[in-house]
Length: 504
Image (tube, rainbow, N blue to C red; front, side):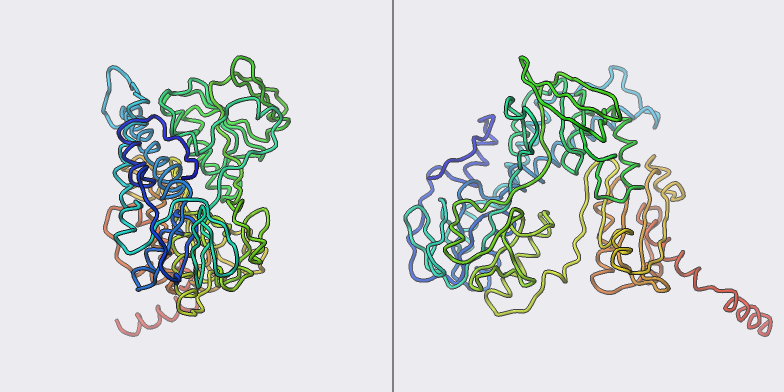
């Protein structure tokens, strides 16, 4: 059996997790004949590929060297959202006086209990990704290190698996940036963060991307003094700047100390971690209890012997074409190991493309996918399609419509009226090319626009769709009304007047 990350603390919930996603007593099957598909990696892309192919009648093998469920279940989406939900509860109680609800004793956060809840819920979800479930689906599950021998054979710790097609779905992991002195301290990444049982009193977080911002705000709400270091001028540098500025203001209200435009970042170990950085010309030198590094990812390709089978790769992962095929036509790839869109939902839909193309000689293309994403700060930012600067770079003329939540009744009543919905359409039309939402539940709301874009429904169709009142999603419908009003030109209005005068 390969080396496993230690699941800490070793409580009943982590023991349950381990028993599902890497059972200590698991016996690898004995291969019988050639597999239609051998999948390396049991994260989202690998699990969807294996389950889908087996459900269609294919003979499938699934190989995992660590924990089934990959980052999403074990150290990503699932535990982070468990932490975020607890932090939101703390913030809601802290801000309850705005609604006339008073907590006389103030907010007391039991961090250990919040983390235990996260582990409990993660263990509850883990049977969905378990070795037993996939065996019951007809998949041969192997635990071990996979290595290509040739274009028909994979070795798993000495056992040879013959295949017609193979899929690389090994994912990616946190990368250590070249920060002076970083190796002198025991820093955290997303792979170790969720083992914490004691709240860091002072917490340094490097990188204000989605993970850094989500965790900075959450830990500040728990009661940590958080120092968030970012080399760019503001947080979430890839997002719409108007949207990011709203989230940044919210994080400041939660007492996150933002050290943006950070220069000359250095880490020292002086009876504990210490970070120094220059931000806007001012020098900071802060002792912290923990440091979280949330900058960069690197693909998991070591040891696969890709050279032996002619699979090209680069520092960001395996090279694939639009059909998710590698430079070896018998081998495909899906998920974080090959995609710039490192999201669970994108890995899921890439896997579906692989199944069709690898097993049935399909012609499905990854470029046809319209992929939304969301950052789960408070408020959330969700996006799909093109940003305004991307449309400009691609010489796509656009019209932009914005509906702010301070004019939406439900948002006002909820006390969540800071954000907006912004959509871009092809100039002179209602064809959607991109959208950004900043709202309490933006991640849920973006799907309506994604559906419209996927199926070619214009902004006018959204405007003519009845939405229940009052909801925050009414903001999206109002954008349809904005578009419809642009069609009421002076000439059209003059025709209407003449018609109405004639029919009086």
